[in-house]
Length: 352
Picture 1: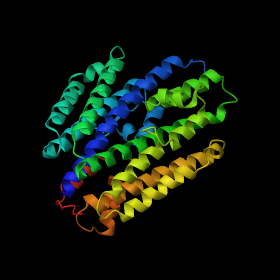
Picture 2: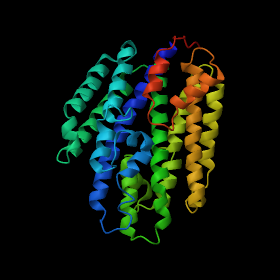
Picture 3: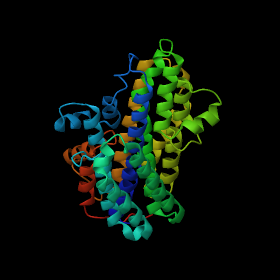
Picture 4: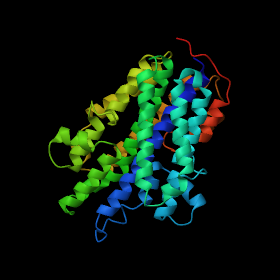
C-alpha cells in the first residue's frame, strides 16, 4: 500500500469520527444548559465557552469572532469553513480523502458520505437555529453510523482497514481525554453541590461519549463522578474508553510493518492507564489534570511516530520535522492544513 493511500484512510477515519463527536457534543451541551438551573453558580462555567476548550480552538475562534456567545460558537463548530475542525470542514476533508482512495473502499461509501456532506451544506442555516438543530445533528450522527457500519461490514481486513481503525481510535481517545480534562473538575465539588446537579453534569459527560446506557448497565446505580471517571478511562469493553482505544490501536499496530517504535509507545500508554489508581487521582485535582494532560501529550507523540513511520516517505531536517510536528499535532483539533501538506508528498510503498 502506498503511504499516500494509508495517510488518506487514516485521516478519513479521523474526520468521520470528529464529525460525529462534534455533533453529539453540541446536542448534549444544548440539552445540559436547558436542564441546569440558571440560578446555579456554575451555570456560566458550564456555558458554550467550554466547548472551545474541549476542541482546543479558543485562539482560532477569537481570530474570527469577537463575542463568545452561543450563536457564534455553534456557527464556529458546525458550519464555519474557516474552522478546519467544524463539521462542514471535516466533511469536506473527509470527502477529499475518500475521493483519493475510492479504489480501496466500497463504492457505496462515497455515496453515503456525499449525502451527509450535501445535507450539512444545504441545511447550514437550519442547523444554526434552535428549532431543528437537534434533529439535524441527530440525522448527521445517524448517517455517520451508517457509513462506519458499511465500512466495518464490507471491508477486507487488510492494511487499509487497519489504518482506518487507527484513525478512529486515535480520534476517540483524544476526544475522551479532552472531555474528561475539562469536565472532571466538577467531581471535586460534590460535597458543595446538590446531588442532582452533580448527576446532571456527569450524565452530560457520559452522553457526550454515547456512554450513558452502557455505564448504567455497568454500575447499576445512579451516576457518580469518580466511578464514571474510572470507567471511562479503564473499562476494557466499552468502545470509547481510553483503555479500549489504546488496546485497539495496539492490535492494529502489531499487524503493520516497521512497528517497533509505535508499538513500544502504545504498549506503555495502555499499561499506564491500566495500572493508574483512579480513586487516588480523582481525589486530587492537580494530579488528575496532570495525568490527563500527560495522556494528551503522549497521544500527540504517538501520532507523530505513526506519521513518521508510515506517512513520511523521506527523512526531514530537524527544522522541517519541528514544523510538521506542530502542524499535525493531535492536541490541536485543526490539522487539515497538515493533512494537505502530507498528501502532497511523494508516495512510498508500505512493504511488510
